[in-house]
Image (cartoon, rainbow, N blue to C red):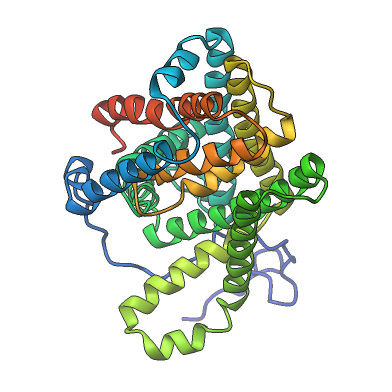
Length: 361
């Protein structure tokens, strides 16, 4: 029995006749990775020997600054802190916490760049949900060493949205690279404005460190694709899949770069404004450029992996930097300690509460 012939209207179009459609941008695909087991609870991490040693090293760093030639008196420092303007401190606190909105939005952009968005079919958290994950990761960094909060952030998003852990960590690495690049550029510009090229030695080390990390990061980014064949030959297939996913996250994140740079710049300026208001609350003069420099140097010091969020080293280095600006040692110590109440101890306290009640942990 022969099939009835189709009329031209019923016949499907041939390849030549088919209409040409605009290509649809699909999410970046990453190799399937093995399931990621839940990390140990943060309480276990805090009680690990290396974390306890980190707190001990923080105390040693603070002790050496206290016994240095700065002639610090803890009673005078406490008196300066108690007399600080409470309204200005509250303003500094509110402004500092607004940076988490900016950082959550930036991470949302980075994730969207690799195809992780609701438009692409992923059950992604809202900007507020990403902010919660981000804040919990900062809390983890404040109570553990070696910045374990970054990996914890990747785990929480994998659990919440079912996305690749390695690709997510790649977006976090890209975020860190953008942070360091903007930090180094902003610090250099602020230093030129504040010191007209004659930089204090402490600031030179911080600036050179930021530039060095930026150059190394950019060189690493440029070499990822080139070393891929070598990595494929060296690594087992399972580890290469993880490397490939990580590479996808890092390289794929660099889209909409001007928007990413703008968000990063706003975030760092908020850090500087927070320190400026804290100094104003204590009643000591500090220029806007000087506040930006000190805040950026403090953030750079907080990445030291020897103690939780650079505890001890951050306070010591920032006090020395402020005194190199001509600020007296006692008010400088008061400014730094009040600043750390805002950007470290408040995260420890509020983060612990959020950790207890959050479903994303």
